[in-house]
Length: 286
Image 1 (tube, rainbow, N blue to C red):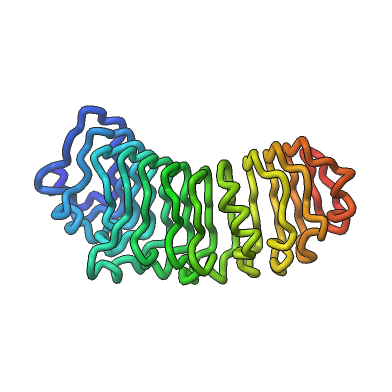
Image 2: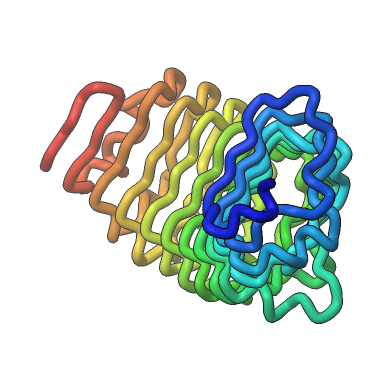
């Protein structure tokens, strides 16, 4: 019945706990959006089914398809948004030979809370128009995508709760990056970025949140950020010191929220010239 619905564009499967498989004759080729949520026993689409979904633009898998171990990037030629969250046995993203050209439309990639996820495609992501990437809660992941600096369209990066990432992408981050979020148990990633000055000079916004074991910020890792406008530091319970060298002169907005060991008397001189400062609930406009 679904296969014959030649006008169906959006399909959501929600909390079908007993659903094991999709129709053997596949889903309508007209689909542009597919969301599968809380369907843990469901087998993901077969290669034959995926090949028919030539119009699919958005795919969301949330806490579903526990049998899925590797997701084939590039199988959907028009896919612009891919969100995989809570797929318990997903181990990798792969790119089959000849599929690179099908990744030109991908703008947004989110891989979150997949505890067995360990690898991105060898050689990096062949996604020239990717603007947003989020990687969160993948506790066994040790390496971020290779050659991220080649993703020149990338604007926003979220790194969240990646405690075992031991090495950053060779070449650092792309040159046009606008916003970088470092959240949760990702101190090693942040310290590598700062110590090796891997954050690009074009960065406009830096958000550091819930990095509970962070004690200080390396000023040398920030001083080259000549375009930085906004710095947000929140819920970093162990943070005691801001850079004694001061913060970038370009900074116009600073937020410090719930950092109890960071004492105003210690750092006020280094931030007092910033036009707008918010410390917890107090807003200071110079």
